[in-house]
Every structure is written in C-alpha cells, then in structure tokens.
Image 1 (cartoon, rainbow, N blue to C red):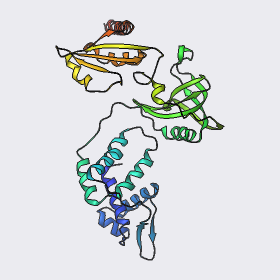
Image 2 (image 1 turned 180 degrees about the vertical axis):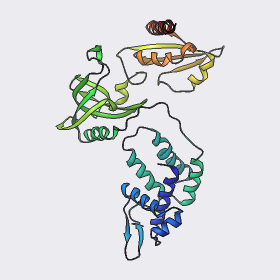
Image 3 (image 1 turned 30 degrees about the vertical axis):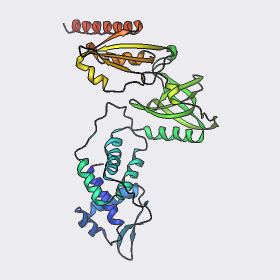
Image 4 (image 1 turned 90 degrees about the vertical axis):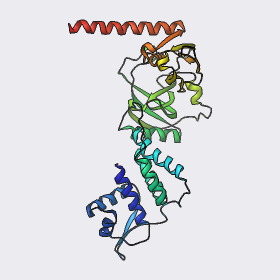
Length: 335
C-alpha cells in the first residue's frame, strides 16, 4: 500500500471518528479525491475490520468512537519507532499475518495526535531500510496459521516436507518426506521461517523450513507440553542454526581491508576479536560444526585465512580447488 493512500486512510478514520457529519461528497472534498476513491477507501476500511456505518437520519458516515482503544500517550520517538516498525521494517519481511499487522498499525496510528502523526510522516519519507536477501513465499500465511494453532493447542501436525537432504544422505534430494511433528517453536532465523519440533519420521527433534512444507494438516492427537525446551540450548553453539554434534575452536585472520567491518558485527556469542599491529584482525570463535561457518568464510574470498582447526583449513582448501577447476574448465569450453 502506498504511503499516500495510507495517510489518506488515517485521515479518513480520524474524520469518521470526529463526530462531525460527512456524506460521500463532503468526504471527497475534505480529502481532495473523487467520490469513487472515497467508496474504494471505505471498502478497504471494511476489509480491515474497521466497522464504519452510514447514518440515514443524518445522511453521514461514521465510526463508533468506542471501537478504538483510548489514545495512547506516545512520545514523538515512540511514535516514530512504531511507524518505522509497521510500515518500513515489517513491510519488507516475509511476515505471516502481515495483513493483520497492517490493520493493527492503521488503528494505532489513527489514535496518534495529528501533530505527532504529521511530524513523524515527514521523517518517514527520509528513512528507509534495506534488508539482506530473504526467502519470499506468498503462501506462508496458511502454513504459519496451522503451525501456530498446533503450538497453541498442543496438537500434532501431519506435514509433507520437501527435503533437500537428510542426515547421512539417507533421504534423496528433492524427496517429499511425510511425518507427524509435535511443534515446539516457530522461529525466524537468518533468512526464513522455521518450525522446530519432534518428528515421527526422524525420531528426534528437527527443524523444518515453512516454505518447504507442501501440506500441513492439524491432527486431533495431543502432544505433551515441553516447558523445559530451550531454543538456545537446541541451537547450541551452531554458527547459525545447524549444530553438527562436534565443537571446534576456530581462528581466522582477516585482512586490514575487511577487518573493521568484521569486528563491528556480533556474528556469534563466543566470538573474540583482536586487532593486530598491521591492521588485520584475529577472529576466534567456538562453533558446533564447520559447514555453516565455512560458507561464511568463503564469502570473504582472499581477505581471510583459516589458521585452525586443520579440518576447516582442508574444507576451505578443497572447496577453493574445486572452484579453480570449475572456472578453468569453463574457460576451455569458451575456446
């Protein structure tokens, strides 16, 4: 939704709650739009669950003043934070129930004093966010809703999951796995949404990416609550989200070109950074598994060198050799 339309909807809500009498013609004149646009905006309010009504006695539109919560005493900074979160940040994330979040934001914004709303609006036009690449799935709402219901009511869910790989390569890539899960947590990690729970197929707690769940059906069967389940404990010391069952002390040396950029980011809870006399950075971290951190290291190319462990040195070296071969072979094909 364009910001100009959103502002107009907020103005429309404010007018309809003012107690003054406005018919369609008066609303159109007040907002500087056509009657057709007013009726279109009224339909949007209805779809958002905002119950306006037409009073035939006064020949005017209105919204019940009791429909909204009393005005909240927000400061300009608090109001700005709310607007940034609802319109700039959330709007760029694959957030399930986004429509509901947008409706809630409109309701809250409409309760802000006009002077604060207008001031924040002028700032909003000059503030923006640019997120890293994030998984995009327009069909996430239904799956998210099913899993959320299951967690809330402690009911098991039958899912058909498009597995890319399985432990020990027992499941061929692309195979659809059918399993019953007892979902413990919904979590957004790194780039996408996941559900974590006990899987009947794997006989252990597993992590499933929501966008790869082809089907999700709520079952009547109840699972026992797991009040002691800890997401932090489950993920352990994984670099991001895939613990492999063995911990490694990793030491890296980053070149001066990227040293400060690396040091400025909190990549892992155990990281330790030390700048060396030549401007390079010694980066130490303890991680469970080497697969995920190896992908991250490769992203820095020749601006990072693995000191230890030897196994990680071997992984990076062999990957680099395969890359050289890949591009060498590609050059031969062009000739």
